[in-house]
Image 1 (cartoon, rainbow over the protein chains, first blue to last red):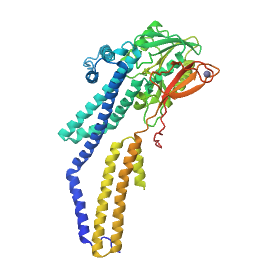
Image 2 (cartoon, chains in turn cyan, purple):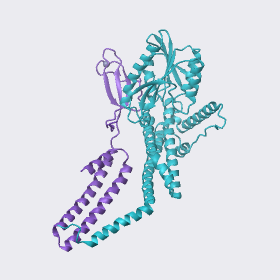
Image 3 (spheres, rainbow over the protein chains, first blue to last red):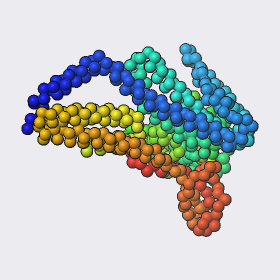
Image 4 (tube, helix red, strand yellow):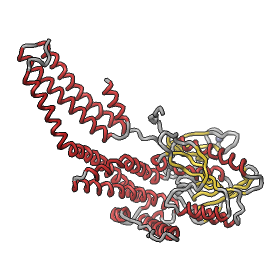
Length: 369
Length: 146
Ligand SMILES: [Zn+2]
């Protein structure tokens, strides 16, 4: 049986094709690689646009449904989505925290006003306004992500630079993950469902439920509860509207009220898990467990340093997608584990009769008190 | 077979974009090979070696079939992946300490944790409250043995 032998022209053709491949790849290899990358980015960009448009549409639908605006809110929503915030100049960083705090306050107020204007029917309903604001903010984030990715994509295509496209392609999986997370967050916010980040408030609300609750600035609630022979001051953002409050300011207020006479401060928060760690794992550590732009963490650290209070942190591990999409069962179930852990910490490291401050950090959406 | 399994596994992960690029590449290569194979079959047939010709022709056709199969396979699976959105559930507990009846229902707008419900407990007629809201993710995360 003869295979290739005897058919010389075939061998020649295959050889030629082989050389052809070599030559093409030597001269155009990078170009081909770039086209593959560009296509990949293009696909993701289409997907991003889809997520973004979906988000915008959902936001408008929810506004129409709940807010009952007098006119079509589409134009106003589009204006809202393009809203931006300029962070303060940091050349001379002294006092920057207060500046940033101030700017974030203005932003918050401004956006809330805007939402009230777009949703006159629920303008007095703090819960609905908060949920709508959160929904719109998620849509805003999606809009921004889409625009930035599109910018680099077009720039890469214009300059035909492999490196621009490559940088974009390298971070794209993370960007897509974040965008998908915001996409599912938007749904949760629109319906007022607790998200993964709500685990801190959930834990605290479980301990606090049934006791008298009072408000502390800003947008937080605190309650004094007997806990293992100690007095626990429990603090969380006010629910069940989508709201993170300003735990920094609230903790400052509570510590000052107690004149610093606290045995410890425990912060409970959702923490980003590393790949390979299980969702809903509980871990314990030291320091201010709070995300965001750092204003709250700064204030809390200042205060606990002033009174030399021990600051402990208990976190529930979850990834970014879990943190902003409806709460997973694993995270929900972790709340009981966290309570046990907090109980242990308090029993081991304080005496009976002490007062401890327990803070549930996170968005209080869908969690009452 | 191993190739197909690999492709199936890849399609199951969420990033369908990447896979379609790889897949198109694989399919293109296989397709090119099958054409070459058919070409060789014709060539050998002309020479008179019918057995070899048949062999190459068979190979070519099988390769082409695999191409088609792979394309359809991914189409179908990509469509399946999108449908699975977990439902958000609310846990309802009876506030009567002796009863403590627990029920589960789908989340409705306006629900929140520690909301008192107007619906009385089905067992004892006591007051009920929502004590938890969560979604159950069925899909198993891929684990890596490290
Ligand atoms: Zn009952």
